[in-house]
Structures are given as C-alpha cells and as structure tokens.
Length: 151
Image 1 (cartoon, helix red, strand yellow):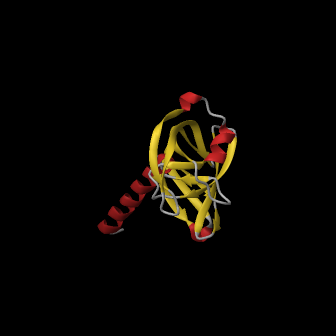
Image 2 (cartoon, helix red, strand yellow; image 1 turned 90 degrees about the horizontal axis):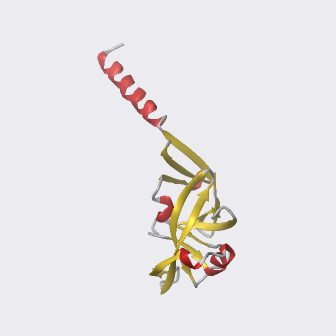
Image 3 (cartoon, helix red, strand yellow; image 1 turned 90 degrees about the vertical axis):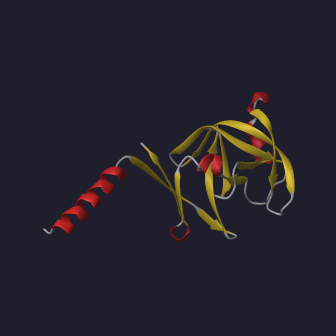
C-alpha cells in the first residue's frame, strides 16, 4: 500500500469508529400535499400526525390534540405569537410535555405551542424543539425521517 492509501484508510476507519458513537433511527414517513408527515407519541399516551417542519422554531399542536392530552395547569409555561400556515400570527399557549417520541427517539420536557387554529388532516408541526436534539435528515425520496444522536 502507498502512504496516501494508508492515510485514506486511517481516515475512513476514524469515521467508522466515530459513527459507532451515534444511534440512528429511521422512521417511515407519509408524503402528502407537498409535505412529509410522521407519527408522534405525546406524553406516552396520545398519537398525533405531525408535519415535519425544520423551519419551525417550536413544535406546534392544534387545540384538538392538546385537549386529548388533558394536561394539568402547571404544564402551561407561557404564551408565544406563532405564524400559522396562512400567514396569520396567533397567540398560542406554550406547554411543557413530559415526552415526545418519534420512532425510538424521545425528547423529555419538550416545549410545544398549543395553537387555536387547526388544519384539516394533521395535528400540528414537528419543529426544532424536538428536531433540534438530533442530526436530522429528511429522505422524502425513500419515505423516511432519519434521526441521529449520541449513544
């Protein structure tokens, strides 16, 4: 082997060794209406169909889904102004959920906005309060959301 090939192999081995430090979760998604949707489990008890939105700074749940959670008053931690799909800005309650899970990936004590406005056919947006805890890849061509984090 030439010296250059040895160095290349060392680098590849390092990347392989580093990759072993990460856990990867591949979650099937549904593609519809130009978006990518995923099943999310909220507080270990309520399933929701959320639009994956890497541009949303906070995950958002429509009021019907928030009602299903039957959250105690102390789960409300404030309010925020959020922009909804039609461009309107609405006031939303900021809520703390115990857990939010997608596939095998889970975030604890995650903040979400509870929006009074809802859309037909889905329950809210999966934003960066969840996605920001992971390395995220949306592989729409193959119908999957890939979440990676340290083991």
